[in-house]
Image (cartoon, rainbow, N blue to C red; front, side):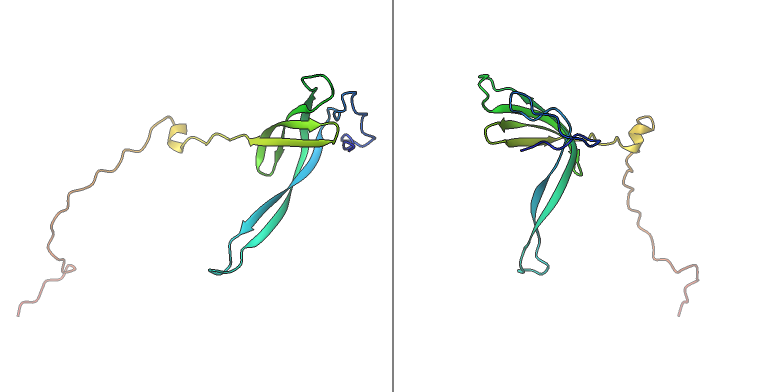
Length: 145
């Protein structure tokens, strides 16, 4: 397999002697399979398949530990519509197969507004005691018979 041309056009750089693809940004995609629930209870479930594009993946290929041109370690990072991720896996120069596992970076949650305004939080409202009241006449004087 030939690596994609570098951004800006032109032919791709030649692969290094190790048989690994060159160090340059990679563009690609993966197919995300899923299920949509039935539109009616007991109805058929719909199978979906969506293409998720990834551009500018940075991959690094480390030579095999035995130095004999065997399976190499792949590490890298990238971004897609789900967020930023790091990846780690293997590259087999004999077959050109790359297998990686992604780990998405979890964004920290924003602090509550009260914490951003100096750390004050609202004091919880204390429950009030129930007061027994007589029924209202709506401001009118009741008629006595």
